[in-house]
Length: 84
Image 1: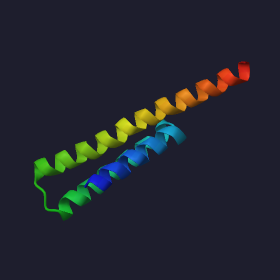
Image 2: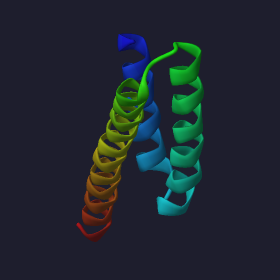
Image 3: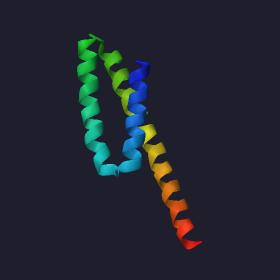
C-alpha cells in the first residue's frame, strides 16, 4: 500500500506540473473507478471502500496542488531571468 500511495503522489505531482485542471478531472474519475474495483476485489466493506476512495483522491489532489505550485514557481523564476 505504501508503494501505491507513493505512485499516486508522483502521478499527481507530474500531472500538476504538466497539465491543467481539465486533465485532472478524467484522472480523478478513473482513480475513483479503480478504487472501487480494488475495494471490491479485496472484499472491503462500505466504510473500507469509502476510506480507500478518500485516501486515493486526497493523495492525488494534494500532490497535484504541490505540482501546480512548483510549476508556478518555475515559470515565475524563468520570467524574472528574462527581465534581468
